[in-house]
Image 1 (cartoon, rainbow, N blue to C red):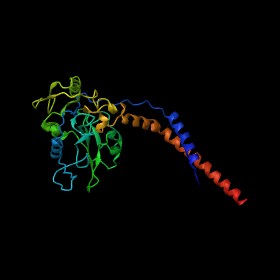
Image 2 (image 1 turned 90 degrees about the vertical axis):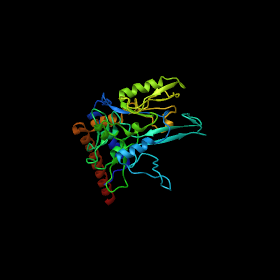
Image 3 (image 1 turned 30 degrees about the vertical axis):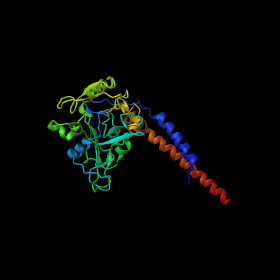
Length: 326
């Protein structure tokens, strides 16, 4: 029996038509962020690249050092990985003389989990190892439930979840916003140690308001920037001159919104942040799944079409064999 490419594609096309016609489904909207969701505001213009946040994250999460130099004197991760949940990267153009300048300048960018309002990793996980807290909105990971399928790695539009390939008992590694510290009244270590308030912790609704305040500042204007936890005011503020911000809050709308908001004076695509649609990928994929598998009618119809194509080819082969004998 043989099925040539043309017959298979015809069958697949016919099956696809039946799928679309036989199992309609209403598109699922983006899921809303919890009203009291917590997150981070990262202001690239305030970041000095000290990487205190990287060291603090390693310490409180028990992550091992990661070396990128031959001497191996210092923990020098180049990207997030199975050993590093948070890292600061640097953008440089031309001479790199001026901070927060797109031309002949440099800027910093924090890379870690953005805790999407409608996370693709949670939607893709078949065993609920990835979960979203209904109150805090934190996207957490349960290593005990994980089966190592790595669907979350493939699904994340930000490339955040990483798999530990170099350990005998691998698991997924990603920032969980230091949720294990919150029972003690603490918060994300990266925000706690940031000397300039470049990384700020708080409720997302308040971080959004703070972002709007900063965007309204005039470039060069002396301003005060909160540090630590925005909602508790646990640290004295930092004074600095406002930068000429890009008029965008990254994470406000991307894939339905994220709980980590970002501000910058350099275009976000230059800083490695992907340009993404407002509709979440999870809502798109789940709508397609419900369309295809609703009531099991569509898969059966598709299987029937492929069976018909296969049987027709069997008959064609038999007829050809008969002609050859004659």
